[in-house]
Image (cartoon, one colour):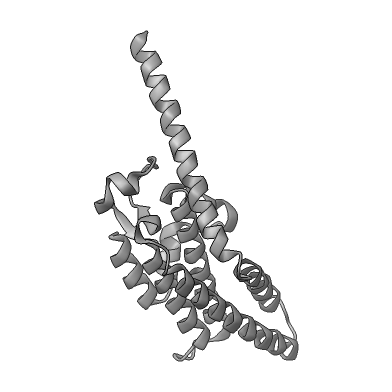
Length: 201
């Protein structure tokens, strides 16, 4: 009986600590993202891609693509500025646990099993910019598909930072019907190689 009581107390304490850590992370990320319109621009792009791909009139479709190109450039610039701003966050505040389960303050007790989210955001910024610039001349459809993957992986990183990889992957699957591995396979080679090296997967 005493063991059960002790175990219950430990579990409750761990849950409280984990919630406090997650609230701190959410507040930290939100305080920086709040300076930008990244989420709104992402929504505009996603809706625009769907509308454009469903447009039968070639002239109208070309007009929509042109508007989306401008939105991509704006989003790329804003995210680059965000990544630059977030790079000034203290390293201890920017560590992300790579453990399969979420443990309170695991980044402090097990620093070897972490990665620096500031570097991840820098990778995302480069990837988004590269796809938006389209120096390799991808088709509009291919560019839209890859840009979506870049943005969704960035969103996954944000959720991973705030909660855990498992929760981030579950949210991505529920919201966008997209598995984490599918995102990894769909981003640009530069993003994929740098991201996997950073997160040691």
